[in-house]
Amino acid sequence: MQADTAQYLHLLQQLLPPGAAWPREPDAVLTKLLKAAADGLARAHNRAIGLIEETDPRAVNEMLADWERVAGLPTACLAGLDQTAEERRATLHAHIISGGGQSRAFFIALAAALGYEITITEFRPMKAGMKAGSPCCSAVWWFVWRVNAPETTVRHIKAGSGKAGEPIRSWGNERLECEITRRKPAHTLVQFAYGES
Image (cartoon, rainbow, N blue to C red; front, side):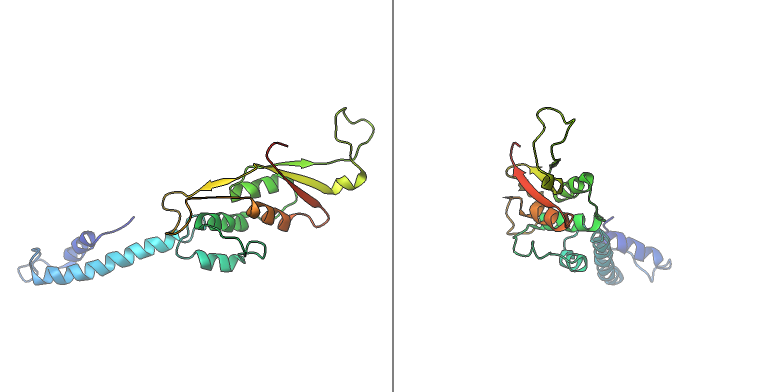
């Protein structure tokens, strides 16, 4: 909870002993002196609150670059992308919460943490007993999977989430492709399909 100078002034005045030598009137010299000290205490209090808020990678502002450095960001494939602060926070959060995995659920959750809604299609070679209408693939398709995403992902900036000069909205799926390709199992090939598939 944020504090103001008046609250700290009241606290400092409560510490004074009783008596006429310790005036509490607003125009008293002692009150003005205590008000100066209270202002510094209130600013220190509010900065401490701000520091606590910076410990959450989803809400970090001032220390975003430090968080990214510790997390090893930006990765080589993200280095050239012009990302908003909101996108950088989403990427940071995705890196921190993802312990790794190879399941469909892992990649869908990773995409969701980055702000994308996707589905995944896995391919299987044709064999006896498969349903009519199933895709007819050769054996190499065991190692191919497809990420189905919206054709254009548009991200709108949220009030208070960005800094001056950032675009109000951005679009594209480079972050999605980069993060999934970087984490895909090495023996697989991932395809990306946009729009209706």
